[in-house]
Length: 328
Ligand code: HEM
Ligand SMILES: *[C@@H]1O[C@H](CO)[C@@H](O)[C@H](O)[C@H]1NC(C)=O
Image 1 (cartoon, rainbow, N blue to C red):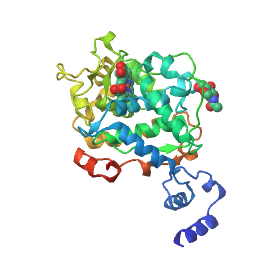
Image 2: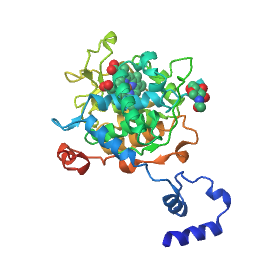
Image 3: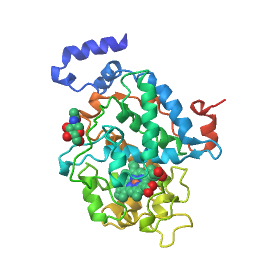
């Protein structure tokens, strides 16, 4: 009742243009009320998808996220991250990592073949239930579930409704970062994707859960992690990347070391040392924007499915007790 009367009042006093951006987040409370009424509900199929993904990504024996989770988080970056203003603003979160086999043809995607096959299989299963399930959405939803399944991982605002594109993001290449690139070149690369120094420093923290499997040519043994707690979404990465002698079993990427020492990005990088709360917030914000790269109209044309993503939990006891994680 209350909503209806507010709607009526709003309709009476607002110009047509005030209604033009339904679906976009607005600072005006009146539009938020309208948004609640107007935005489509998250399609039911995603509840099933999310349940399957969290089982896939959670290692119940240690209460941490597993190799599939790490790979899924990286896959989300590598699908969206092809979008680049300086290279024609093509690509983006369009499923082309998988449907155009970018995972097979771009060297930077090495290691993503296995997770790509798994996510494609899931998409094929669920598109039979709901024709709206795209590969592009499957990749982003998988990443959000993977992040939150890692203890202390934040719940990233998560949308669905992206369209798939079977063309690979075009040449010239070099849209995805190299692990031996300089700090300056990486900062420029991320700026061309719309990210500032804080965003980049925050996004790099995804290497808190990372392991390298294909970097032996740069001296990183297969399976070596980028921090000492690679199943947990914590800030040890920010400290350990800058140590002259990292702990045994930790192999920082040269690119991360270069950025940690970069005049501009390094300042932000150091700002996350021992600051889990700050990092979680900045990461979730940047990752949400990452998930919209190249999506026409951005979130205004998508449906908010954040409500079906599990809530963040800080330890494995919580995780096991949370209903979403209860298993027979
Ligand atoms: C300067 C930018 C970056 C560079 C140079 C970089 C490079 C790499 C490399 C070389 C690997 C190891 C791949 C392998 O050999 O298996 C890796 C893994 C990973 N990266 Fe990045 N990355 C960057 C940014 C990001 C961002 C922005 C994210 C996500 C937000 C991300 C998430 C991950 C994850 C989760 C893994 C672990 C994958 C696995 O264990 O299978 N990275 N990255
Ligand atoms: C599909 O992707 C290619 C390469 O990124 C791009 O040029 C083209 O515009 C995209 N098509 C659509 C419909 O977005």
